[in-house]
Image (cartoon, rainbow over all chains, first blue to last red; front, top):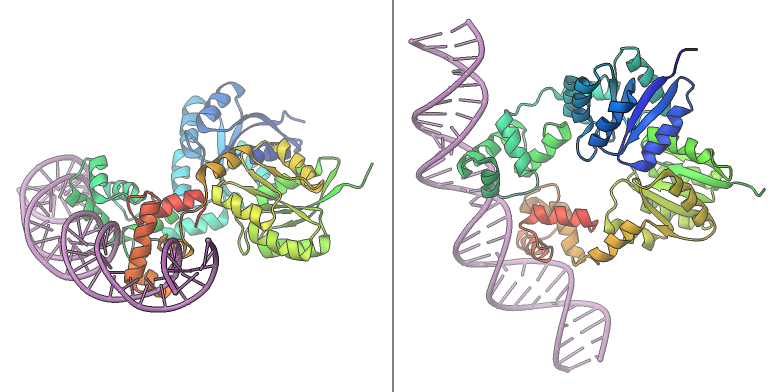
Length: 204
Length: 204
DNA sequence: GGTCACCCGTGACATCTGTCAGGTCCGGCC
DNA sequence: GGCCGGACCTGACAGATGTCACGGGTGACC
């Protein structure tokens, strides 16, 4: 038998991470060599544990799974990454693939799939959850220009226009124009609806 | 040795649920007798698996963990319930305790804790995560009147006043008054900020 | 060089919101 | 019965927001 696949596991929810670690460790050909509860921790742990595959939660404090992937691509080029997420938004999938993620799964997939995907990624393959892929294709690309997305993101927490303008170093009028065009493009009723749509799609 | 504690596990995220199930099953004195991926499923499964303790995710399709607890209190009075959640809001804890939940844990707690809490609850005890309890005490009770909370909830998705008024069968003026008083009570800058605050506290 | 998309801005307008001041009912409590 | 708080409503006003029309500047591409 060949040496087992070395896996790094990062998730800020200890309960989940430890359960997954135990589960993956039960597989004969997998061994969890490091765990991390945040993005920066994951990068640090990866540096000296040298895993073959990193299984990363998408939402983590510090750096999210995608940012960690980018770091690892530099620090540990041989290491494949699998991203796992609770909220499978189309935009996230696109960004993940662009960052070099080779496996992308919602947490609703069955447990058996995860181990299988780790093997696939280790072998150089890719795996994207079919439902998520379908959604991503159906959703298409973001119709928002970069600035529109920026402004919409700043508007997401309900801040008034003046505050957005100050934070984006724009004039209030420009902010309103961007918001207005974003609302139109997204077919939303108002800015908050637009935020909701953009968030659902993973565009902001 | 006495018979093992019969555990029901409900979580809509298959990956997580299966991992937790395996983990709990590894404990000598625990056995997972049923799993469910939604609230209604959990109630149905509990009826004929007759678990001693139900471990429920707070957010599930159909019925949430608290609603399931209430159902189980009727259908299976002897069954203790433990609620596990990703987002530990003070208000949720209060509602959970009021519904008869005897264990309340964020998913960030360590894995060992869960098994221990299951045992505690089975023995008739209670366990609430200390951090969450502190937060809940610090947050205090909701200052919102029932109607204010209703209206704020309807406003949460960014609907305009007229739509809220229609859905709540109120006049637009009344809606604005409720929103205004909610904003004042919560010390928020506007209705959306108020929604954010109320949500963070688990009041809506 | 022309065209186009994006970026950034102004001004003006109608509408929506947030706030205030007032009012009527009803039920609980001393 | 009197008091109080909550539910419900109206009207009015300033200010914020959404929309439209209209500028100019830049860089990519043909």
